[in-house]
Length: 373
Image (cartoon, rainbow, N blue to C red):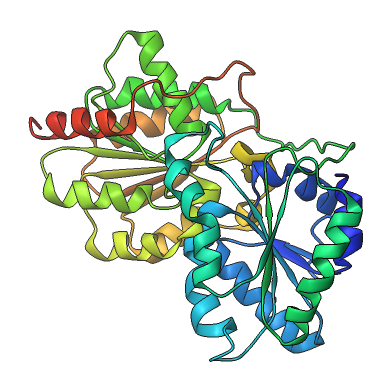
């Protein structure tokens, strides 16, 4: 189905959400039509954030907002759905558009398998009627389903469209970029070089995929790295939990700007306890690149100032190769909570693969290694 037909049926004029590769057609359409005009389209930090924004929009206008997300974000949205939107509380209607990763019977990555199994059940538990949009769905069928869902909305209850893989299309695929020159994979190579045998926790998406392949090219084992393949935004908290229990080991966390923004409160918690063995590196390309490249709010954020205000003892921004080498060398020698913001270009190799070892094996090997440091 053309995404133009989908949005025509819904007929909404405000969208907020977190980008998803399964919803790439919708995301590209919204950027083409609205860009980042916040009165019509706002990219949020996380799914609970956009659900609350949508609630505010409805109260201000009386209209129905659209919240888009990957199904992995349902967990982030459950709190405002149950304690804000629900008819037993404020009875606020929202139209959810959810990309269905890990759909049963469709091969996907391990972090999506269970989430895919419970996607519809979570909506049912939240008492949200839904319509599943499949690749063979047409506008007429959507209009019929929408007629029923509109009745639910008219009673100020939320509804959802669950989008299967390949169900929406948009001809004008957007291209995203920035002015930075450092290539992320080469930056990670330098981090690996300087960290030596120190443990690394890497964030969701292409960062972990690139780290895995770098180890393969170098002929090194993967026991040094914990690849946070799911739970976006939590890698720095995982690293903190390890750093506090392994005070003699230097811990490196390779984070992304979108992931850092998703649960930014973790910076304050990390800064409050100031583990002097943690090096937190945020690879900032101002984009949700793994799911298509839509922009994050990090382009206008003073990450260094934020880290310092949260209690990081040292923070610096790294714009180029020379500064990168110098800062990594100092980070390796320093004791003290450190944050480095490395400004990276958008882009990755077209043949970038995915980790080939099972997630449980990664965890077990990493735990065995941690027991030795």
